[in-house]
Image: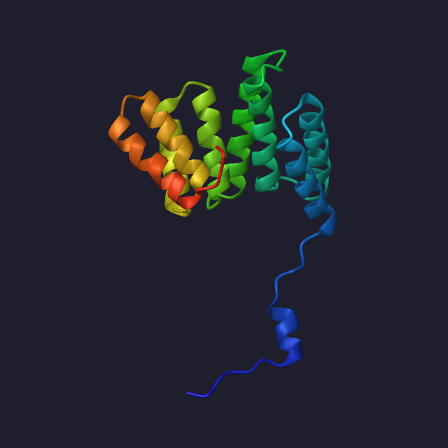
Length: 173
């Protein structure tokens, strides 16, 4: 069998469109701010995500990270109204999944948001689905292990925690 060579014109038309660099820069900047975990950085992350969503409306990555900014406020004790923050986190995570049901990160986010709302059975199901989509997803495996431990399923929890550590041995989380 002879190799198939594509002409230069075919290469250009077979490539997907280049990502919008403004959107990409805003998303990366939002991630950078998010991981600094102060109120000011959380606000800056949200501002970047709002601008990124103007460029690329209903983007599942932006929606998922925006959901995490709401959960982060609750975890850090910064939320004036924790119930509203958790409600908004769930709403955004559901939107992310509805925009891309194949996104392991969106399902991971929804699972985490559902756990914050106290819906452990559905949270566990979402995290399991995230791992079906991407078996090496350390954060999803770790979160699933945590929720299984809280649910009294410690033997299963240990397996997922070990899976998370194997997938990302230097991750401090």
